[in-house]
Length: 202
Length: 337
Image 1 (spheres, chains in turn purple, orange):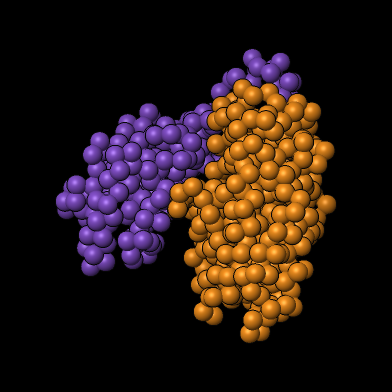
Image 2 (spheres, one colour):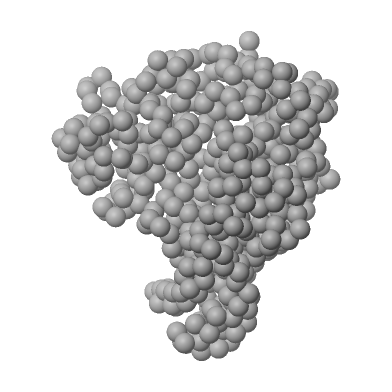
């Protein structure tokens, strides 16, 4: 079965497939009051089949459209390295790479990650050992409690890859989306400087 | 979060035709477009937005809506580019620094990788009473219910462009840079494409704050046109509680064409303290064609804020806003171009 049954196309709309479904939901939705009256119907989970690649491995499953990518990673795939701090896109703890870019998995619906490539902290280390950024966080004592660390490391790797880690000031600016309540910031900057050198040497 | 249907659109017209139902308030439209989802999913978690269907438009139009190119009419920018993609564009950095600054000084690197430009200009206010549905009073969410911010905690609220109905601050940064450069918005509706001045996109909250823009149901922003560039002498100053990853308390987008000390052309827009992206037309009129000194800048700033309506906790934005306007112009004048 293909996972793209929910793709909208003009043909689909005109031929009535998706259009019928859309029209029905449009009629049912209406103002907020109508939604509340219709709560019993609206509380039913709406499931969709998706395929996505996580740390190089293709995964297929049915998910509730409300499920965030962070919950899918942690609860469905057991990849608990990705942390959920605020669950509102404000703290950066849930940072993963999607198609090579750092993004927030708590604000990404799992269905929106379909057919995309996700890399989590578990997928960062190669067969040869830790990623240089992971080693640099250890070497520079760049954490205390460690809760924000997977997000920090995923963000830091992307920060270097993007070319936004050329100076301390630039590192601070481009890492500002990752909060650390233990305030290990100076050590995080030091770790990124160290890892940048080894990442650039390749 | 309430259950919803998710679909992806690739064909622009299919997307537009899927979203045609009017809503009692914009925020309650039953079908919503989703680009990066950074604002939408957040508001859905808070139960402020309750769509029955979400149409993912990240891939809509393919590369058509993801280009940056110079044309006879001006610089065209596709609406499906991410904020990070445009901020890191070399042409923008060289010829339109104000457009770049308005992007990299906003949000965080992760959010800028997700958020699309079209959605960025439509991002919703961070008014805490709008975001918290346990407060019933919010004219944006529930027309006619009142405005809890008027005598509530209104430190982050607007001092310009508000009304008794709503004083919610327009939270974005990039919008200020677009209005400063007289940008045009290109939209696609079920009747076809049209364009409008960016200045006409957002509606001031006079009598009906729940109608936030002049877009009709289903209209999709596909691009922006910046006429009359380049603007190498331009910048965006943003003043906030912390130096990065925070909304503006005051901001100024400035673009200048100087002949010695004289401003042949001057564009100023303000943010962080206004209900919509705010063109400082009064200040511009006093400065255009004149010799620019710090003294005349302060006079122009006074005029721009003459109608400011500060409330209990946001009065600091009046002096801060004036100072930000003055600083924005002085810093832009001092740029090495």
